[in-house]
Length: 325
View 1 (tube, rainbow, N blue to C red):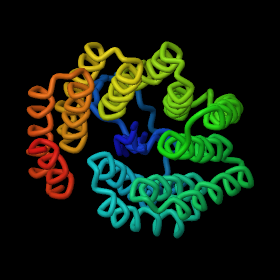
View 2 (tube, helix red, strand yellow):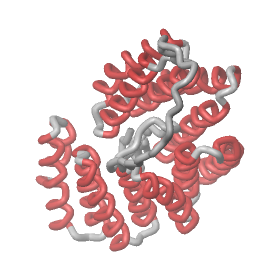
View 3 (cartoon, one colour):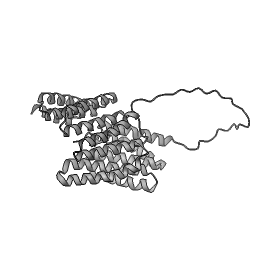
View 4 (cartoon, one colour):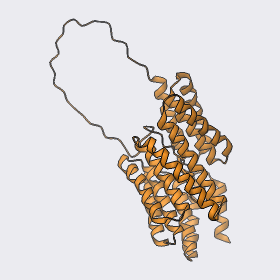
């Protein structure tokens, strides 16, 4: 889920947190960019002896669980495109199936996802309650990686709030505390690539808050390596978006623009209009900081066009006001 509030998370992205890409980043939940089909031909000798004519019963049934996982994938994809209200509606079916099958993993994944979407919509207290509940339930039932992931999203959300609402030494102290908490959670999730990537993105945000620009970018690039290897295109796009934000904050405007172009290339591959509009808006912001108002207005205009095309009239109107002022 990406709400590109890096201003998260997902992230939203994120960054929305996006948080902006709020992810949505559940172990084994989804893969973008295509899958390979491997064909194998086996030659075997079949000996027919003592075969029963009665078909064997399956060891387990996964029909409802597979349906729940598919709905969760769809909800996460919808959220990554900035449609959080729609994502919540889609998630209701996944949650119902998770509860009816009493599947511990799906229960947690749907709870964490709902928390991500609610945070992106500004319903913070509900999001924190869901993550806290998922953390406790995960530890109780042995789903320690998902429990840690819920805590990672909690830390990420608090970093987003910190970046908007606190400054000075107090903010730095809190960011250091969040980084220390995050290190403990990353030790728990180290066997899971996507949860580890979520941790790296969040740690990059902590380093950014502390103005340690090189460390911040290098940490986010660890997540990028995981997402590129797994062909998680939208997540890689968000990684580059966050790198662009880090470079812009450091005053490196040209390289920030370069990173945004790379993010755009990924979002085009994913056909993610919300991600594209967010990138063009950010590009306008960077150009404006660099003193290039004509290019800033051109980027904002393109962003407004995309936001309007995907039905986000309010964001389009805000950008058009910037252009005319």
